Length: 278
Length: 230
Image 1 (cartoon, rainbow over the protein chains, first blue to last red):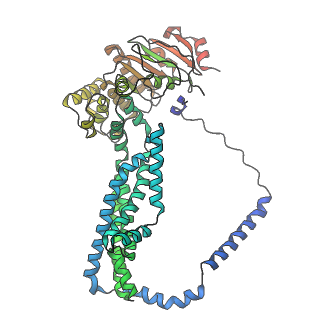
Image 2: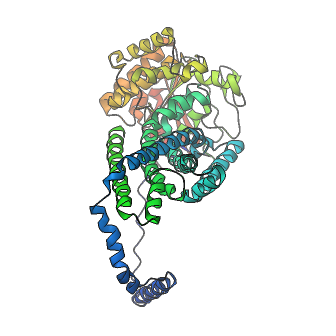
Image 3: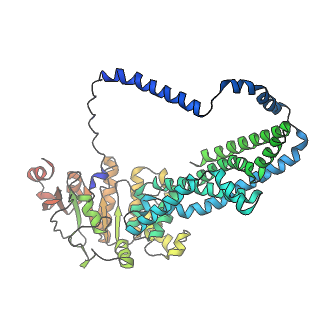
Protein backbone atom coordinates (compact mmCIF):
# COMPACT_ATOMS: atom_id res chain seq x y z
CA UNK A 1 0.00 0.00 0.00
CA UNK A 2 1.49 3.31 -0.92
CA UNK A 3 1.43 6.21 1.43
CA UNK A 4 1.79 9.88 0.82
CA UNK A 5 5.33 9.93 2.13
CA UNK A 6 6.54 10.09 -1.47
CA UNK A 7 5.37 13.68 -1.76
CA UNK A 8 7.59 14.71 1.13
CA UNK A 9 11.34 14.61 1.35
CA UNK A 10 12.42 11.74 3.54
CA UNK A 11 14.28 12.79 6.68
CA UNK A 12 17.99 12.36 6.16
CA UNK A 13 19.04 8.88 7.20
CA UNK A 14 21.20 8.78 10.29
CA UNK A 15 24.83 8.24 9.41
CA UNK A 16 25.99 4.76 10.40
CA UNK A 17 28.61 4.84 13.09
CA UNK A 18 32.03 4.30 11.57
CA UNK A 19 33.43 0.96 12.59
CA UNK A 20 36.84 1.18 14.23
CA UNK A 21 39.69 -0.03 12.01
CA UNK A 22 40.46 -3.61 12.73
CA UNK A 23 44.13 -4.60 13.02
CA UNK A 24 43.28 -7.55 10.75
CA UNK A 25 43.24 -5.10 7.81
CA UNK A 26 46.96 -4.59 8.22
CA UNK A 27 47.46 -8.27 7.36
CA UNK A 28 44.68 -8.67 4.78
CA UNK A 29 45.73 -5.76 2.57
CA UNK A 30 49.29 -6.93 1.75
CA UNK A 31 48.06 -10.50 1.41
CA UNK A 32 45.39 -9.40 -1.06
CA UNK A 33 47.84 -7.37 -3.12
CA UNK A 34 50.25 -10.31 -3.22
CA UNK A 35 47.52 -12.66 -4.37
CA UNK A 36 46.43 -10.21 -7.09
CA UNK A 37 50.02 -9.87 -8.32
CA UNK A 38 50.39 -13.66 -8.43
CA UNK A 39 47.18 -13.95 -10.42
CA UNK A 40 48.37 -11.37 -12.97
CA UNK A 41 51.67 -13.27 -13.46
CA UNK A 42 49.68 -16.42 -14.14
CA UNK A 43 47.39 -14.59 -16.58
CA UNK A 44 50.40 -13.08 -18.39
CA UNK A 45 51.82 -16.57 -18.89
CA UNK A 46 48.49 -17.90 -20.18
CA UNK A 47 48.18 -15.06 -22.68
CA UNK A 48 51.77 -15.70 -23.87
CA UNK A 49 52.81 -12.23 -22.85
CA UNK A 50 56.35 -12.03 -24.21
CA UNK A 51 58.56 -8.93 -24.07
CA UNK A 52 61.39 -10.35 -26.27
CA UNK A 53 58.86 -11.14 -29.01
CA UNK A 54 57.61 -7.56 -28.81
CA UNK A 55 61.17 -6.23 -29.12
CA UNK A 56 61.92 -8.59 -32.03
CA UNK A 57 58.71 -7.48 -33.74
CA UNK A 58 59.42 -3.77 -33.38
CA UNK A 59 61.11 -3.30 -36.80
CA UNK A 60 58.13 -4.82 -38.58
CA UNK A 61 55.73 -2.84 -36.40
CA UNK A 62 57.61 0.30 -37.26
CA UNK A 63 57.66 -0.55 -40.97
CA UNK A 64 53.88 -0.77 -40.95
CA UNK A 65 53.31 2.13 -38.60
CA UNK A 66 55.68 4.53 -40.37
CA UNK A 67 53.86 3.94 -43.63
CA UNK A 68 51.15 6.12 -42.10
CA UNK A 69 53.53 8.99 -42.88
CA UNK A 70 53.70 8.05 -46.55
CA UNK A 71 50.22 6.89 -47.57
CA UNK A 72 49.58 5.75 -51.12
CA UNK A 73 47.42 8.59 -52.42
CA UNK A 74 47.04 6.89 -55.79
CA UNK A 75 44.30 4.64 -54.42
CA UNK A 76 42.36 7.54 -52.96
CA UNK A 77 39.38 7.23 -55.32
CA UNK A 78 38.88 3.57 -54.32
CA UNK A 79 39.29 4.41 -50.60
CA UNK A 80 36.78 7.25 -50.80
CA UNK A 81 34.26 5.03 -52.56
CA UNK A 82 34.64 2.46 -49.76
CA UNK A 83 34.40 5.17 -47.13
CA UNK A 84 31.12 6.22 -48.70
CA UNK A 85 30.01 2.62 -48.52
CA UNK A 86 30.89 2.38 -44.83
CA UNK A 87 29.01 5.60 -44.18
CA UNK A 88 25.97 4.30 -46.00
CA UNK A 89 26.10 0.96 -44.19
CA UNK A 90 26.13 2.78 -40.87
CA UNK A 91 23.33 5.17 -41.86
CA UNK A 92 20.97 2.49 -43.12
CA UNK A 93 21.61 0.18 -40.18
CA UNK A 94 21.02 2.94 -37.62
CA UNK A 95 17.84 3.97 -39.41
CA UNK A 96 16.46 0.42 -39.44
CA UNK A 97 17.80 -0.29 -35.94
CA UNK A 98 16.20 2.84 -34.48
CA UNK A 99 12.87 2.04 -36.15
CA UNK A 100 12.88 -1.44 -34.66
CA UNK A 101 14.18 -0.36 -31.25
CA UNK A 102 11.61 2.44 -30.85
CA UNK A 103 8.51 0.30 -30.24
CA UNK A 104 10.48 -2.36 -28.36
CA UNK A 105 11.89 0.21 -25.94
CA UNK A 106 8.43 1.16 -24.66
CA UNK A 107 7.67 -2.48 -23.99
CA UNK A 108 11.06 -2.84 -22.29
CA UNK A 109 10.55 0.13 -19.92
CA UNK A 110 9.72 -1.08 -16.45
CA UNK A 111 7.84 2.06 -15.40
CA UNK A 112 5.34 1.73 -18.27
CA UNK A 113 4.83 -2.01 -18.03
CA UNK A 114 4.56 -2.94 -14.36
CA UNK A 115 1.30 -3.17 -12.49
CA UNK A 116 -0.27 -5.86 -14.67
CA UNK A 117 0.94 -9.49 -15.01
CA UNK A 118 0.55 -9.57 -18.82
CA UNK A 119 2.49 -6.35 -19.48
CA UNK A 120 5.07 -7.30 -16.86
CA UNK A 121 5.59 -10.58 -18.71
CA UNK A 122 5.97 -8.72 -21.99
CA UNK A 123 8.50 -6.43 -20.31
CA UNK A 124 10.67 -9.38 -19.33
CA UNK A 125 10.42 -10.87 -22.83
CA UNK A 126 11.53 -7.61 -24.48
CA UNK A 127 14.30 -7.02 -21.94
CA UNK A 128 15.60 -10.54 -22.55
CA UNK A 129 15.50 -10.12 -26.34
CA UNK A 130 17.48 -6.88 -26.10
CA UNK A 131 20.02 -8.48 -23.77
CA UNK A 132 20.39 -11.53 -26.01
CA UNK A 133 20.98 -9.36 -29.09
CA UNK A 134 23.53 -7.31 -27.15
CA UNK A 135 25.36 -10.35 -25.80
CA UNK A 136 26.27 -11.54 -29.32
CA UNK A 137 29.40 -9.67 -30.48
CA UNK A 138 29.03 -7.53 -33.62
CA UNK A 139 31.75 -9.48 -35.43
CA UNK A 140 29.86 -12.69 -34.86
CA UNK A 141 26.70 -11.14 -36.33
CA UNK A 142 28.80 -10.10 -39.35
CA UNK A 143 30.25 -13.61 -39.80
CA UNK A 144 26.79 -15.15 -39.59
CA UNK A 145 25.29 -12.74 -42.12
CA UNK A 146 28.24 -13.02 -44.51
CA UNK A 147 27.77 -16.79 -44.40
CA UNK A 148 24.01 -16.35 -44.94
CA UNK A 149 23.75 -13.69 -47.66
CA UNK A 150 27.27 -13.56 -49.11
CA UNK A 151 30.03 -10.95 -49.14
CA UNK A 152 29.49 -7.22 -49.56
CA UNK A 153 27.86 -4.29 -47.79
CA UNK A 154 24.48 -6.01 -47.29
CA UNK A 155 25.59 -8.44 -44.54
CA UNK A 156 27.28 -5.41 -42.95
CA UNK A 157 23.97 -3.58 -42.86
CA UNK A 158 22.29 -6.61 -41.29
CA UNK A 159 25.00 -7.09 -38.66
CA UNK A 160 25.05 -3.42 -37.71
CA UNK A 161 21.27 -3.33 -37.57
CA UNK A 162 21.38 -6.02 -34.89
CA UNK A 163 24.05 -4.05 -33.09
CA UNK A 164 21.99 -0.84 -33.29
CA UNK A 165 18.80 -2.57 -32.12
CA UNK A 166 20.56 -3.95 -29.05
CA UNK A 167 22.24 -0.69 -28.20
CA UNK A 168 19.29 1.61 -28.89
CA UNK A 169 16.77 -0.74 -27.29
CA UNK A 170 18.75 -0.48 -24.10
CA UNK A 171 19.43 3.28 -24.30
CA UNK A 172 15.87 4.18 -25.30
CA UNK A 173 14.23 2.06 -22.61
CA UNK A 174 16.57 3.48 -19.99
CA UNK A 175 15.65 6.99 -21.15
CA UNK A 176 11.98 6.10 -20.71
CA UNK A 177 12.63 4.69 -17.26
CA UNK A 178 14.37 7.92 -16.28
CA UNK A 179 11.45 10.26 -16.98
CA UNK A 180 9.51 12.27 -14.43
CA UNK A 181 6.43 10.22 -13.41
CA UNK A 182 4.54 13.36 -12.31
CA UNK A 183 3.22 14.42 -15.74
CA UNK A 184 2.20 10.81 -16.45
CA UNK A 185 0.12 10.73 -13.28
CA UNK A 186 -1.39 14.14 -14.10
CA UNK A 187 -2.35 13.20 -17.66
CA UNK A 188 -3.72 9.84 -16.52
CA UNK A 189 -5.89 11.76 -14.06
CA UNK A 190 -7.49 13.77 -16.91
CA UNK A 191 -9.12 10.60 -18.21
CA UNK A 192 -6.67 10.22 -21.08
CA UNK A 193 -6.23 6.75 -22.58
CA UNK A 194 -2.98 4.84 -22.20
CA UNK A 195 -1.83 5.76 -25.71
CA UNK A 196 -2.61 9.44 -25.09
CA UNK A 197 -0.63 9.32 -21.85
CA UNK A 198 2.35 8.01 -23.83
CA UNK A 199 1.98 10.59 -26.62
CA UNK A 200 1.64 13.57 -24.26
CA UNK A 201 3.32 12.45 -21.04
CA UNK A 202 6.16 10.22 -22.20
CA UNK A 203 7.20 11.16 -25.76
CA UNK A 204 7.91 14.89 -25.16
CA UNK A 205 10.11 13.92 -22.22
CA UNK A 206 12.17 11.35 -24.11
CA UNK A 207 12.40 12.87 -27.58
CA UNK A 208 15.65 14.83 -27.09
CA UNK A 209 17.27 11.78 -25.49
CA UNK A 210 16.15 9.56 -28.35
CA UNK A 211 17.68 11.93 -30.92
CA UNK A 212 20.93 12.15 -28.94
CA UNK A 213 21.14 8.38 -28.41
CA UNK A 214 20.47 7.75 -32.10
CA UNK A 215 23.31 10.09 -33.10
CA UNK A 216 25.56 8.38 -30.58
CA UNK A 217 24.66 4.96 -31.98
CA UNK A 218 25.55 6.26 -35.43
CA UNK A 219 28.98 7.41 -34.21
CA UNK A 220 29.67 3.97 -32.77
CA UNK A 221 28.23 2.27 -35.86
CA UNK A 222 30.64 4.04 -38.21
CA UNK A 223 33.53 2.65 -36.19
CA UNK A 224 32.04 -0.82 -35.94
CA UNK A 225 31.21 -0.75 -39.68
CA UNK A 226 34.91 -0.46 -40.52
CA UNK A 227 35.71 -3.39 -38.24
CA UNK A 228 33.00 -5.77 -39.46
CA UNK A 229 34.16 -5.03 -43.00
CA UNK A 230 37.24 -7.08 -42.22
CA UNK A 231 35.24 -10.26 -42.20
CA UNK A 232 33.88 -9.49 -45.64
CA UNK A 233 30.96 -7.24 -44.80
CA UNK A 234 31.90 -4.40 -47.16
CA UNK A 235 33.27 -0.91 -46.66
CA UNK A 236 36.67 0.31 -45.51
CA UNK A 237 37.38 -2.72 -43.33
CA UNK A 238 37.18 -5.06 -46.30
CA UNK A 239 39.66 -2.88 -48.19
CA UNK A 240 41.99 -2.68 -45.19
CA UNK A 241 42.11 -6.43 -44.80
CA UNK A 242 42.79 -6.92 -48.49
CA UNK A 243 45.77 -4.51 -48.48
CA UNK A 244 47.15 -5.90 -45.22
CA UNK A 245 47.05 -9.48 -46.49
CA UNK A 246 49.02 -8.41 -49.60
CA UNK A 247 51.50 -6.47 -47.42
CA UNK A 248 50.56 -3.22 -49.15
CA UNK A 249 51.16 -1.18 -46.02
CA UNK A 250 51.14 2.24 -47.70
CA UNK A 251 47.76 1.51 -49.24
CA UNK A 252 46.55 0.22 -45.87
CA UNK A 253 47.83 3.46 -44.34
CA UNK A 254 45.61 5.45 -46.67
CA UNK A 255 42.62 3.42 -45.52
CA UNK A 256 43.49 3.93 -41.86
CA UNK A 257 44.01 7.68 -42.25
CA UNK A 258 40.73 8.13 -44.09
CA UNK A 259 38.95 6.06 -41.42
CA UNK A 260 40.47 8.21 -38.66
CA UNK A 261 39.44 11.44 -40.36
CA UNK A 262 35.93 10.21 -41.05
CA UNK A 263 35.36 8.92 -37.50
CA UNK A 264 36.76 12.09 -35.94
CA UNK A 265 34.64 14.33 -38.16
CA UNK A 266 31.47 12.39 -37.33
CA UNK A 267 32.25 12.23 -33.61
CA UNK A 268 32.85 15.96 -33.54
CA UNK A 269 29.75 16.89 -35.51
CA UNK A 270 27.47 14.49 -33.70
CA UNK A 271 28.76 15.49 -30.26
CA UNK A 272 28.10 19.14 -31.12
CA UNK A 273 24.52 18.39 -32.09
CA UNK A 274 23.94 16.20 -29.04
CA UNK A 275 25.22 18.92 -26.73
CA UNK A 276 22.76 21.34 -28.21
CA UNK A 277 19.74 19.03 -27.88
CA UNK A 278 19.99 17.99 -24.25
CA UNK B 1 0.59 -1.71 5.92
CA UNK B 2 -2.72 0.10 5.75
CA UNK B 3 -2.73 3.77 4.80
CA UNK B 4 -6.40 4.41 5.53
CA UNK B 5 -8.67 2.77 8.08
CA UNK B 6 -12.41 3.13 8.61
CA UNK B 7 -12.75 6.40 6.72
CA UNK B 8 -16.39 7.40 6.36
CA UNK B 9 -16.55 10.79 4.72
CA UNK B 10 -19.23 12.46 2.66
CA UNK B 11 -18.63 15.72 0.79
CA UNK B 12 -21.75 17.67 -0.25
CA UNK B 13 -21.75 19.20 -3.75
CA UNK B 14 -20.10 22.61 -3.98
CA UNK B 15 -18.24 22.31 -0.71
CA UNK B 16 -14.62 23.33 -0.32
CA UNK B 17 -13.13 20.77 2.01
CA UNK B 18 -9.63 20.95 3.39
CA UNK B 19 -7.95 17.82 4.70
CA UNK B 20 -5.22 18.52 7.21
CA UNK B 21 -2.76 16.21 8.85
CA UNK B 22 0.87 15.26 9.14
CA UNK B 23 2.86 13.87 6.27
CA UNK B 24 2.01 10.17 6.09
CA UNK B 25 -1.44 10.59 7.67
CA UNK B 26 -3.09 9.24 4.51
CA UNK B 27 -4.36 12.51 2.96
CA UNK B 28 -2.70 11.87 -0.38
CA UNK B 29 -3.79 8.24 -0.53
CA UNK B 30 -7.35 9.27 0.24
CA UNK B 31 -7.38 11.86 -2.53
CA UNK B 32 -5.95 9.35 -5.04
CA UNK B 33 -8.64 6.83 -4.13
CA UNK B 34 -11.28 9.24 -5.49
CA UNK B 35 -9.99 9.00 -9.08
CA UNK B 36 -8.27 5.68 -8.36
CA UNK B 37 -4.71 6.71 -9.02
CA UNK B 38 -4.45 4.48 -5.96
CA UNK B 39 -6.71 1.43 -5.84
CA UNK B 40 -8.42 1.02 -2.47
CA UNK B 41 -7.92 -2.50 -1.12
CA UNK B 42 -11.38 -2.52 0.42
CA UNK B 43 -14.37 -0.27 0.91
CA UNK B 44 -16.45 1.84 -1.45
CA UNK B 45 -15.96 5.18 -3.13
CA UNK B 46 -19.14 6.84 -4.31
CA UNK B 47 -18.88 9.74 -6.76
CA UNK B 48 -22.16 11.55 -7.36
CA UNK B 49 -23.96 8.62 -5.79
CA UNK B 50 -22.34 6.00 -8.04
CA UNK B 51 -19.96 3.32 -6.80
CA UNK B 52 -16.77 3.86 -8.81
CA UNK B 53 -14.63 1.32 -7.01
CA UNK B 54 -14.91 -1.29 -9.77
CA UNK B 55 -15.75 0.60 -12.96
CA UNK B 56 -13.41 0.18 -15.94
CA UNK B 57 -12.82 1.12 -19.56
CA UNK B 58 -14.56 4.14 -21.07
CA UNK B 59 -16.71 4.60 -17.98
CA UNK B 60 -13.61 4.81 -15.81
CA UNK B 61 -12.03 7.39 -18.15
CA UNK B 62 -15.23 9.45 -18.05
CA UNK B 63 -15.09 9.43 -14.26
CA UNK B 64 -11.52 10.74 -14.32
CA UNK B 65 -12.37 13.41 -16.90
CA UNK B 66 -15.04 14.71 -14.52
CA UNK B 67 -12.48 15.06 -11.73
CA UNK B 68 -9.72 17.67 -12.05
CA UNK B 69 -6.55 17.18 -10.05
CA UNK B 70 -3.62 19.39 -9.20
CA UNK B 71 -0.39 18.34 -7.56
CA UNK B 72 2.33 19.63 -5.28
CA UNK B 73 4.94 19.47 -8.08
CA UNK B 74 2.54 20.92 -10.72
CA UNK B 75 3.31 17.93 -12.99
CA UNK B 76 3.33 19.86 -16.24
CA UNK B 77 5.13 18.43 -19.24
CA UNK B 78 8.07 20.82 -19.17
CA UNK B 79 9.02 20.70 -22.84
CA UNK B 80 5.52 21.39 -24.12
CA UNK B 81 3.92 24.80 -24.45
CA UNK B 82 1.57 26.08 -21.77
CA UNK B 83 -1.34 25.79 -24.20
CA UNK B 84 -0.58 22.16 -25.09
CA UNK B 85 -0.34 21.36 -21.39
CA UNK B 86 -3.80 22.84 -20.85
CA UNK B 87 -5.10 20.99 -23.92
CA UNK B 88 -4.16 17.68 -22.27
CA UNK B 89 -7.11 18.47 -20.00
CA UNK B 90 -9.30 17.92 -23.09
CA UNK B 91 -7.94 14.42 -23.82
CA UNK B 92 -10.99 12.77 -22.31
CA UNK B 93 -13.18 14.50 -24.90
CA UNK B 94 -11.19 14.36 -28.15
CA UNK B 95 -10.86 11.53 -30.72
CA UNK B 96 -7.86 9.40 -29.77
CA UNK B 97 -6.33 9.16 -33.24
CA UNK B 98 -6.37 12.94 -33.85
CA UNK B 99 -4.87 13.55 -30.41
CA UNK B 100 -1.87 11.34 -31.26
CA UNK B 101 -0.91 14.00 -33.79
CA UNK B 102 -1.60 16.83 -31.34
CA UNK B 103 -4.62 17.87 -33.39
CA UNK B 104 -7.24 19.67 -31.35
CA UNK B 105 -10.39 21.36 -32.62
CA UNK B 106 -10.77 25.14 -32.53
CA UNK B 107 -13.35 24.70 -29.75
CA UNK B 108 -10.88 22.78 -27.61
CA UNK B 109 -8.27 25.49 -28.11
CA UNK B 110 -10.89 28.10 -27.15
CA UNK B 111 -11.71 26.17 -23.98
CA UNK B 112 -8.01 25.95 -23.13
CA UNK B 113 -7.39 29.65 -23.73
CA UNK B 114 -10.47 30.52 -21.70
CA UNK B 115 -9.18 28.41 -18.81
CA UNK B 116 -5.83 30.20 -18.98
CA UNK B 117 -7.71 33.50 -18.85
CA UNK B 118 -9.50 32.34 -15.71
CA UNK B 119 -6.17 32.03 -13.92
CA UNK B 120 -4.76 35.20 -15.47
CA UNK B 121 -1.95 33.84 -17.64
CA UNK B 122 -3.38 33.73 -21.16
CA UNK B 123 -0.37 35.79 -22.30
CA UNK B 124 1.90 32.83 -21.54
CA UNK B 125 -0.03 30.39 -23.74
CA UNK B 126 2.74 29.87 -26.29
CA UNK B 127 5.83 29.71 -24.10
CA UNK B 128 7.39 26.50 -22.87
CA UNK B 129 5.97 25.38 -19.52
CA UNK B 130 9.36 25.17 -17.81
CA UNK B 131 10.08 28.86 -18.40
CA UNK B 132 7.35 29.80 -15.90
CA UNK B 133 7.75 30.35 -12.17
CA UNK B 134 6.34 27.82 -9.70
CA UNK B 135 3.23 29.86 -9.00
CA UNK B 136 2.56 30.34 -12.70
CA UNK B 137 3.06 26.62 -13.35
CA UNK B 138 0.53 25.78 -10.68
CA UNK B 139 -1.94 28.15 -12.30
CA UNK B 140 -1.38 26.38 -15.63
CA UNK B 141 -2.07 23.12 -13.80
CA UNK B 142 -5.33 24.59 -12.49
CA UNK B 143 -6.20 25.63 -16.06
CA UNK B 144 -5.47 22.09 -17.26
CA UNK B 145 -7.82 20.68 -14.62
CA UNK B 146 -10.47 23.31 -15.51
CA UNK B 147 -10.24 22.34 -19.18
CA UNK B 148 -11.65 18.96 -18.17
CA UNK B 149 -14.88 20.80 -17.26
CA UNK B 150 -14.80 18.91 -13.97
CA UNK B 151 -17.48 18.72 -11.30
CA UNK B 152 -14.92 17.80 -8.67
CA UNK B 153 -11.47 19.26 -8.07
CA UNK B 154 -8.79 17.46 -6.08
CA UNK B 155 -5.72 19.38 -4.95
CA UNK B 156 -2.87 17.46 -3.36
CA UNK B 157 -0.72 19.88 -1.35
CA UNK B 158 -1.09 22.51 -4.09
CA UNK B 159 0.95 25.17 -2.30
CA UNK B 160 3.57 23.11 -0.45
CA UNK B 161 6.26 24.10 -2.97
CA UNK B 162 5.28 27.78 -3.14
CA UNK B 163 6.08 30.88 -1.09
CA UNK B 164 3.33 32.36 1.12
CA UNK B 165 2.35 35.14 -1.26
CA UNK B 166 2.07 32.82 -4.29
CA UNK B 167 0.29 30.27 -2.12
CA UNK B 168 -2.49 32.78 -1.43
CA UNK B 169 -2.85 33.54 -5.13
CA UNK B 170 -3.17 29.84 -5.98
CA UNK B 171 -5.58 29.06 -3.13
CA UNK B 172 -7.52 32.19 -4.08
CA UNK B 173 -8.06 30.85 -7.60
CA UNK B 174 -9.17 27.46 -6.23
CA UNK B 175 -11.60 29.16 -3.88
CA UNK B 176 -12.94 31.40 -6.63
CA UNK B 177 -13.46 28.49 -9.03
CA UNK B 178 -15.18 26.54 -6.27
CA UNK B 179 -17.40 29.53 -5.58
CA UNK B 180 -18.15 30.64 -9.16
CA UNK B 181 -18.54 27.22 -10.83
CA UNK B 182 -19.79 25.26 -7.84
CA UNK B 183 -17.02 22.70 -8.29
CA UNK B 184 -16.75 20.47 -5.23
CA UNK B 185 -13.17 20.89 -4.07
CA UNK B 186 -11.08 18.70 -1.79
CA UNK B 187 -7.68 20.13 -0.96
CA UNK B 188 -4.93 18.56 1.12
CA UNK B 189 -3.03 21.09 3.14
CA UNK B 190 -0.55 20.78 5.90
CA UNK B 191 -0.81 24.42 6.95
CA UNK B 192 -3.72 24.83 9.32
CA UNK B 193 -4.03 28.60 8.78
CA UNK B 194 -4.60 28.22 5.02
CA UNK B 195 -7.23 25.57 5.70
CA UNK B 196 -8.98 27.90 8.15
CA UNK B 197 -8.84 30.79 5.72
CA UNK B 198 -10.03 29.12 2.52
CA UNK B 199 -12.15 26.07 3.39
CA UNK B 200 -15.82 25.66 4.32
CA UNK B 201 -15.02 22.53 6.28
CA UNK B 202 -11.92 20.95 7.73
CA UNK B 203 -11.22 17.26 8.26
CA UNK B 204 -8.20 16.13 10.24
CA UNK B 205 -6.44 12.88 9.33
CA UNK B 206 -4.12 11.09 11.67
CA UNK B 207 -2.52 7.72 10.94
CA UNK B 208 -5.16 6.92 8.34
CA UNK B 209 -8.14 7.82 10.49
CA UNK B 210 -10.38 10.86 10.79
CA UNK B 211 -9.76 12.58 14.11
CA UNK B 212 -11.57 15.85 13.43
CA UNK B 213 -14.45 16.98 11.24
CA UNK B 214 -15.84 20.46 11.61
CA UNK B 215 -15.98 24.07 10.51
CA UNK B 216 -12.93 26.37 10.46
CA UNK B 217 -14.03 28.23 13.60
CA UNK B 218 -14.31 24.95 15.51
CA UNK B 219 -10.59 24.41 15.08
CA UNK B 220 -8.90 25.21 18.37
CA UNK B 221 -5.86 24.30 20.41
CA UNK B 222 -7.26 20.86 21.26
CA UNK B 223 -7.96 20.02 17.63
CA UNK B 224 -4.44 21.11 16.73
CA UNK B 225 -3.03 18.79 19.37
CA UNK B 226 -5.13 15.83 18.26
CA UNK B 227 -4.17 16.21 14.62
CA UNK B 228 -0.54 17.26 14.80
CA UNK B 229 1.03 16.53 18.18
CA UNK B 230 2.18 13.14 19.33
